[in-house]
Each structure stands twice: as C-alpha cells, then as structure tokens.
Length: 522
Image 1 (cartoon, rainbow, N blue to C red):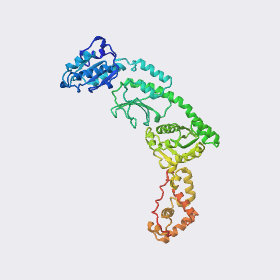
Image 2 (cartoon, rainbow, N blue to C red):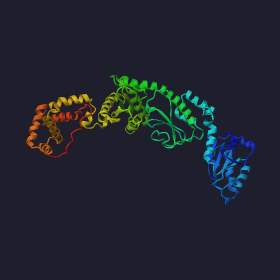
Image 3 (cartoon, rainbow, N blue to C red):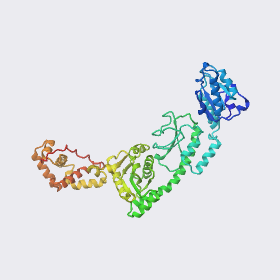
Image 4 (cartoon, rainbow, N blue to C red):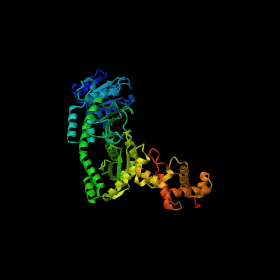
C-alpha cells in the first residue's frame, strides 16, 4: 500500500497539506500513533505516523515542530497524518517543517477516528475480505508461501504463529481446551487461564480444525483479546495452517507414544532389564526420583483418559516424561517428582474441558529410580481405585502418600472385595430384615467409636451397662471375634468401613470416632 492510496481513500476524508509525487509512491509498512514530542524511538522505517498534536502549543515556538518532524524523517517515517480536533487545524509551522524535511503531511478531520485509518492500512495490506469473492486468500502471497514452507519442514506452532502476523503483531494465543498455552505471538502478555468464549472478553476465539486424532482436552484454539486486530477470514486461514501443524505434531508423537506403551508393558512384567531398556527408549534417566500416574475414564474411554493425562502432564512442564497405555488400556505417565507435584491443582481444570466425562487418576509415592517404577505403578493403580471409590461422581486425583488412615487405605480395595470381607466378618449382623441384628450392629459401631469403653458406650446409647455387656457378648458370638483383643477389634472396624450402600457402590461412611480419653474403663 502506497502513501497515495491512503490519502486518496475518500472514506477517510484526509486533507493533503503538502507532498510531492515521488514521496507518495513510497510503501507503507505499518502505523504508529503517538503524541510524544520526540517519537523517533517508537517509529519504524516505512510507517505513517498519526498524531493528535497534543504535544504542540503556540508558545512552544517553531523549534518544537522542527524537532518533531526531524525525528520522523530520521526514523524513516513515510508520512504524517495530523489530527485537527485538538487545535482546529494543522499548525502552519508544522506544515512548513514537513516541507523542509520532505515529509508528506495531511490533516485528519475531527470526525475521523484514528482507528479507522489503522484499520484501512491493515485491511489493505492483509486483504479486505468484504470486497473480494469467496475464493480470495486473506493471507498475502509471500506470507502464505512462508507458512506453507514452515509446515512442510514441520516447524513448531510458536514459529508459525510468529510468522502469520505482521511485524508488529497483535496479542494472539494458541491454547488447548484445557487452557494450556501452546504458543503466543512475540510480546504478548500472560495468556488467559481458560479458553475464553468468543466475545466473552471483547476478543475472538477460533477453533483450529484438524484431521489429527486428538482428544477434546488437546484441541487447539486461536484467541485474540482484540477482536478487531485481524479480519475473521485471515484468522480462519491461519487456523487452517495451524491445523496442519498439529497433524504433523501428532504424527511425530505416535513414535513417542509407542515407546511409552512399551514401557507400560514392561512395568506390568517381571523383567527388570526390560523396564530399564524401555525407560531409556522413552528418554528417562536411570535416576529419579519419579512418580507414576494411572488414569481411566471408564470402560471403552481409554483415549479420553490418555488425552486428559497427557494434557495435565503438559501443564506441569516436565523436563522428561512418558505418557502411554498399560496393556489393559489404562493410561499412565512417568514424570519427575517435582513436576508431579503440580498435577493436583491442574487436574480439575483439565477435566473441566470435557464436562461429560469422569476421569479419575492415582499418583504413586516417589520412586528413587527406574528400578522402582513397577512398584510405583502398583501404588498408582491402588490410588486410582481409591479416587473412584471416594469421588465416584466427580473427576478426582488421589495421592498414594495421602492414604494415611485405615479408611483411606481401604478405599483402594475393589468394591467387590470390600463387600465380601464385610459380609464374611460381620455375618448375620448385616441382615437388613432383622431388627435385633441392626441394634447389635449399631452397638458395635458405638463401642468401637468409644475405644471399647463400656460406660461411655452405655451413655451414648442411653442403655444400662449390663445391656451393653449382653450385646457385646452376642456380637462376639455371631462374629467369632473377641472384642477384648486389639486385632479382632481392628478386623471388625475394617469390616464396618468396608460396608457398601444398598446399591452396592459407595462405602458406608465410617463410624464417628469418639474424643480420645485417658480412661480405660470397660
């Protein structure tokens, strides 16, 4: 776009005040808006300069205008567009200074917004889509060729995003559905925490369509906080290029995932040499410490669990990690301990990217090195079972290091095993049709919750102590346990914790423990 093209645009109504024909043929590279008295350091070669002339005053003398225009010329500006609103017209000494320094100058009427001028330059450079047929490309030919070349050599999304916009790019972010920043334009500030809905922050968000096999958690979105920073068709062309970039990334990732799947197979075997070799193939050093994560999203939804886990690991930014599937389809990851510490806070927002899917995960205790990974995997799978038990209706991540009580530990036992243990230990006390059995079961709960104190159990149940003695003897008869023995008390306490609701799913809440006392009265 030449200076003449802009000055001749009738929709802007610019008033040329001084120029020469040769100067009007100079190419415009961009726009700078400034009201600084010395703007030179902010102006780039080839730019036109818009100024509201707030810096000018009648008592400032001709030297002020002279310094302003000289600075524009030395910076390589191609024209000055001076606003008329502040002073009613463009001062004469400024026009004279422009003539001395061969700087084309035009007045901007008070009713013309500077934004209209910048938009005109931008649309002329990048293609005004509303004036062209549907098959017109918004990207300039040289930019399109550049981007195609970058995709062909499998450049990363950051390089493509930087090349897709003008030299002075708007803030633009490439985000996953879970809110991870994949890339951003140079100079862009902090990215939004979540992917904003289109227009929710005054910006624009465009989905990156791709033929790549990606889960909802890993889907890309291009977000610009300023909706007017680029035409819609331009953004769609850029997202099409980014979609091809993601396809290339997914192709390269397949080999990495195959190596991780090999590690998963080795971890479920019993050959330490295979584990070490598989870990090396994944780029994991022999020394840790490492932690293992296991995740699933229910039957036949292994891809979703893998996608959620891969996205969560990506949010923690580990130096090295392996993410893949175990032979049974469960997703797993091995990552350094310092990165694993960040999984808990990112798990809820990652899972929120696909609200209709419940993804549970379990995190192992630290393993000193590769040799301990099989044991860490067993811990992670146990913690996964605990997460499913304690939060069956919401996504959750359970940490094996947090299983520090008997009831927490038992949540990792399969529901069928818990139910069988409870039935075999408590026997007829679980008969729902027997009122006397229900009374005995309640007495057992209160007795154990009060640390085996006859007196406090009688007080809590509003019974005579002799009645409590009688009921305890009946409980011992039916269960074959001696409540004077600590081991038998623990068995019965565990059996109470292992009871399940009538639907066979969630465990019954643990009996409430009484406040500790120094008394040992029975």
